[in-house]
Image 1 (cartoon, one colour):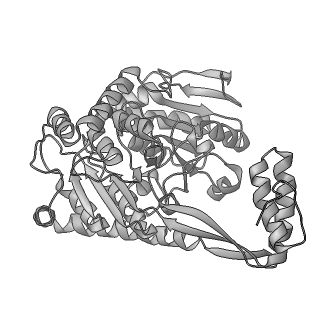
Image 2 (cartoon, helix red, strand yellow):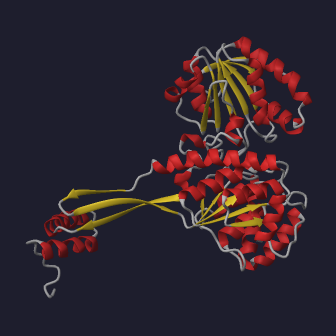
Length: 450
């Protein structure tokens, strides 16, 4: 593996560092591939015009899948689940129990309330579930059945009435374990349908697929682009790019463990960044040695190798203060802290999708079994948003009621003055009539008022 030894402040970075390994290529532009955009736009427009017929055409074209119905019947689901080994069912159940327990605790943290700000002025907040949501679970090379836990379980805990789960067939075959995960998670409908055609059908609706209000779940570049183009017509969780891992390590870290964890996320795809920031040059070199030894024998080398070659990096910084600053600059999806005091990151770091503290924890736990949600922001979006959580399936709405006449009169007078300052005469008049009805205010804009 070729390494570099550039020292000093690299362009765009907030601190000086020594680069023991730098990416071979730059990050893909955030706007995406123009050809992907055009293809997705054409598919969406066609499905909006032709409905089920277009969905069927694209499913046959892209997934070699042409069933009579994309919606699995209860009998089909039972038959599929029965084929799944008992140990797989047990593991799915364990993971979903973890996700459910965490989502329920999140829900408990969101409280409805009502306060009285003036005599008889009641203001309230309610958290109301979205009525219908879709959970997209990717297929392809990696059938990410764990995404069923994250999207469906969380939605049902939030109280979503109708959850539609969709996943593509894999090379013309049914992904049994994914369907089992969807069923066990509580999906109300299961579609064996993937790609842009699934996202578009769920957002727009067809003759046989009722539209939803929000679509959640990761996917490839085409799925992400479909969600981007359909946002506004339907809600989305976030726009996910390639999976990312960033590890911050000091001289106490185990270099073998660091190497294994970096490669664990690199295998997601050839464009998945894997970054190490360390205060120890010795550790950085040992990590490189372990990666060079382990990588050639990985069964997923065809993805992990280009990911590490093209998007992997090792920064050596002066101290942890610089490590925190550089970590915040990356604003990575997954940030693993392998230092003597890992919980310091809770106060020192600000930009991340999820933190994994200490060598007993790893990103793979978060991906699969630990219970926090693995649908997380990428490409720096952690600077302004978090990942999928139970609150995403809720709408925080407000209500107000004024029962005291004197308070309504007071508010009416203030509203009239405030509205006229902004030249909103109609708004002002709504305040005027209440100030007059419930108080002693008078106005002259309607001499013939009743």
